[in-house]
Image (cartoon, rainbow, N blue to C red):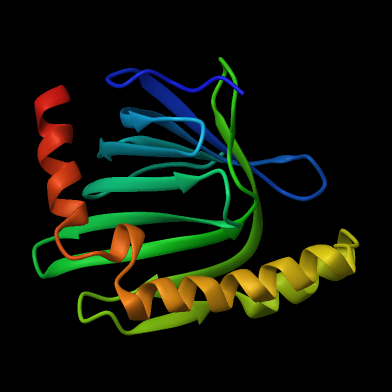
Length: 175
């Protein structure tokens, strides 16, 4: 698998299990790109939904994608602290078109005090039935929720103190 060069501008595409596009983030600046992880930054970018709606993000964000874990994390920098939105989904792939992953509905929102909430369990149950998620995928996702909660509790990866601030400073240098 190839990976994007630092400083390049990429799109991020999320898909659903059935192969249909779910959401496209139009531009993210690559701050670190390896075959194992991609860290990117963006600010007030356009997002396209599968139903044609478009909206613009409201704040700067640092995005963390890994090729080895079934989740990705977006650290959103707000006036009252850093909020994280974590998507449960496949490890990323990258081609010349975009960074891509399959979104499996479940999300974890993490607040500045590092408390968190699991979201969209009802959406997961509905899509799991409609799209026939394999039992193996369900097992991986349940383990991944536990792993992500451990990362949050242990302040690991993107939750490490200073991680978002460090990469945000790098982002500002590339703008």
